[in-house]
Image 1 (tube, rainbow, N blue to C red):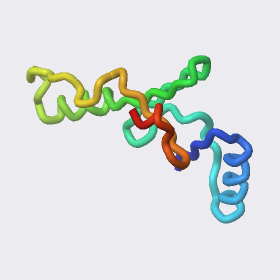
Image 2: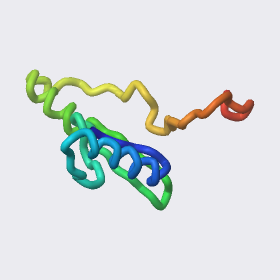
Image 3: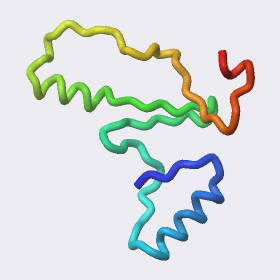
Length: 93
């Protein structure tokens, strides 16, 4: 299970509640889950998710190593944000 939250206190509280009901251990900071690589840049406040390693395995599995590649369907500059409540006029644009 992966637990993510902006408030470390909430993570600790949830972890204690779960440990009370289930046997579990903390494996530390997640670097990969479900074939998705997770990279953090705490200085810049960014989180990058990548499935490039998984996709390379799938391409090799189906013997498509030499197929013509295409660009990603989502532009690399696309940014995702957490939304709480209604969006402001600036955020809607």
